[in-house]
Length: 304
Image (tube, rainbow, N blue to C red; front, side, top):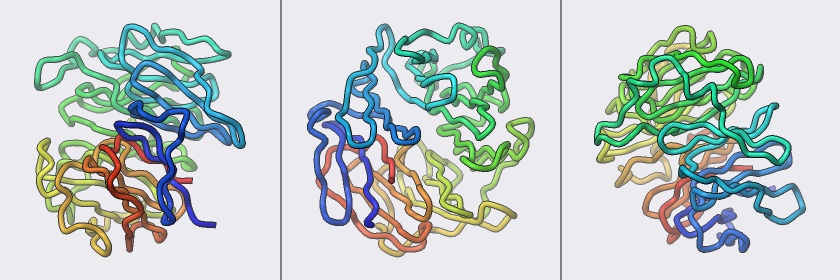
């Protein structure tokens, strides 16, 4: 069966395959900025103010409305759906109720979180490992961890590393990856210690990370402006250098391939761009093809 990809854009959610792109009517005309899957259920942030979900074979339904802050990211966990927001707050949707995670307001070092342009920091990405440990990436605020379903939190990475996406391996407890401004942070002990990998990259500024089988992939550019952006891959284990993905991709992307715009499921890897193109690989990033173009700016991708 041909892989299908959900693509969140400025003007709605699309189902994309090599046969074409189909709009999801229920979310048409609204920005979809984050999507996540939980078994047979898919979640989405729509317009920054509402949480929608669909179960297999059913219709999209509004599940919660977010007030006070714009929602930025989400991740399902055993204790509920965790939702990050602007100004670095965290919410949890459980049993139909949306409530703030008060303990997140007391994270050690929170007073040092910042952005270079002077606004408050935001929650940029959230991930959950197979043991249920939560990792929350604050920009700029490092990565904080909870091992008890959000009852307590601890920082794990210096905030000046400037993390743009954190990703826990879906099947290997303790293996956590962080796409950062200094390269790829790799922790094999649940965030207790980190190494930084840069070998083979043309530049160290990373925005996104994904895992496809035994391969990890990142997006790299020369800086926040996104000049000379590219996709790289390397084995998940060992210290082999990154290799640039070339076959079927542009020589350079015109902008950063951003947080959540690189994703994988099995051997399928997907990239979405700010100029509305979607590229797909069926062989862990070795070769690529253009799956869609002419969409509005892509905010997130989720392969089946």
